[in-house]
Amino acid sequence: MNYKHLKSSDPEIYKLVRAETRRQASELTLIASENYAWPAVLEALASPLTNKYAEGYVGKRYYSGNKIIDKVETLAIERAKALFCAEHANVQALSGTPANLAIYSALCNYGDTILGLSLSHGGHLSHGHSVSASGKLYKFINYEVDQTSEQINFEKLRQLALENQPKIIVAGFSAYPRNIDWQKFRNICDEVGAYLLIDLSHTAGMVAAGVLPNPTNLADVVMMTTHKTLRGPRAAIVLCKLALAEKIDKAIFPGTQGGPHENTIAAVAVCLAEAQRPEFKTYAEQILANAKVMADELKNLSYHLVADGTDTHLLILDLSHKNINGREAENLLAIAGINTSRSTIPFDPLPPTKASGLRLGTAAITARGMKETEVKILVKMIDEILKANDKKLAKQKKAEIKELCKKFPVQ
Ligand code: DSN
Image 1 (cartoon, helix red, strand yellow):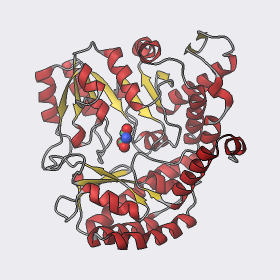
Image 2 (spheres, rainbow, N blue to C red):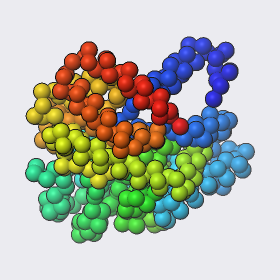
Image 3 (cartoon, rainbow, N blue to C red):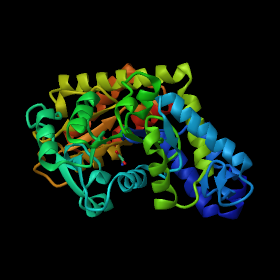
């Protein structure tokens, strides 16, 4: 984009946009929830579709002039349904947390019981944390991972469900590195008569590409954000069974949102079209291959990984036996131009502000074209920086990271 108007209308913002674009190009992101939106997605986001009010749904809008907008939203809906084999799709949710809040309000009354994985064990704020509206409006009971395997203990989850008779069980996480046995979640939900809500935000891209199993047919509702492994805009898609379609749609609009962002919905449609291409499958396979190599290399260097590795794009480095905590590691690597996010580990003795873990993800570096060779170089560098725990050395590494970034430009 040439930003010709922005440059003359608001030089301050223009400069900051250019500076952030340069920063993204010259630093690496190993933040598991970040990625580079496709250029076509950025173009759709910047289109005049942002000008249109389209409260309501296709064919039932509260304003005139939505003939073309209806076609845009229909394309996004149909692509989402086809890609994930869903009976119904709503593409209006603004992002993951508002989408989850809308889903809870569609399926529950305030105060009803919901089970969700604890944030410090890999869950998400919107899965019932006390600082989130989800935790304030509903009676969330958190399940945890097993202390030894650091994976979900389904028998314990089942007991918790039997004791508490939840209306919903939330499955799907933001810091859980292993494959999930969705069928086991379904069985527990069936036994206690709960809805199964799957939060697929992190792994949506790999599921769309067919390299991770698609759980849509097992869930009552699936929610996914589109800006992570799908490389789309910051938005969310909600999929559900036809029987729940009306409730879900009403909970999103007018229940919790007003006018949909149709430029974003167009960008969602674009990323879903990209995800249908054979190249996207190759990309998704490489994300997983890169994460596997990253995990193996770190283990060879004697790092413990939560759940002993990964089956997805993310892994959690357990630093509890190292001389550095998660926040210090995050800060040190950022000096070198390697962006990561600190993460609690299961049963973490440290508060989330410090945390004993570091979450790493491979979706963004893979989008730049990096493969196993570059992952090995990166792991070596990360190890050197963390071991030295020295800001000077981290600063020196920045030049190497810049060189690497030049070879693998943001595409
Ligand atoms: N903040 C995102 C993540 O990092 O996983 C989820 O919303």
